[in-house]
Image 1 (cartoon, rainbow, N blue to C red):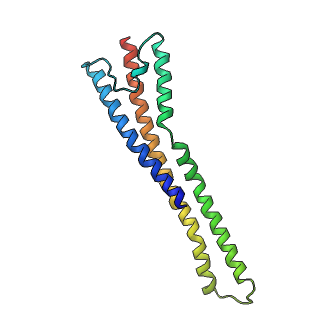
Image 2 (image 1 turned 90 degrees about the horizontal axis):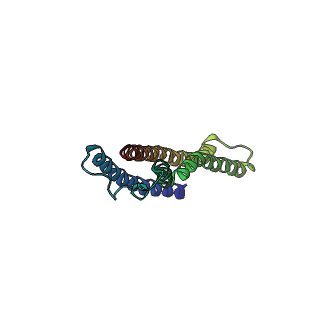
Image 3 (image 1 turned 90 degrees about the vertical axis):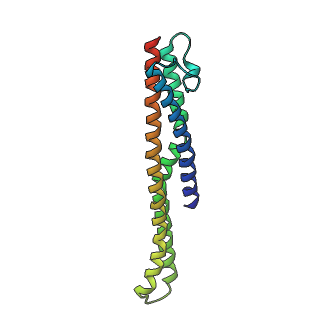
Length: 164
């Protein structure tokens, strides 16, 4: 679980910071396009796609490619958020089975002896749920950032197509 947690935080911090920088840049480019102060700057991710024939199709392909690149890591966050509770549950089941195996040779076992062993086994489920909460939350935050970037890119494309 600790490896999952490290991966979740690494993906989130890296993607969140990267996307924030890219979104701020694309927002500035869009502000420049809508205010009429400049045509189109080389700062935009769509800059390499803004010339030539069939501009609409080329810009659309660039948008798709940019969003694909921006959403890197989202699959891992989704996988971790959906599998970590099951991994934790598996750890709990194994812990409970080990506890029962340990007490199998005794004829009478008090609840005060069983409870700590089961409690210890349940820690695995708690750890799985803990990791899943972060992974799911970070997945939603990054998904929203990718959506926001997509909105800016589509708006830039529409303006560029309208200006010809």
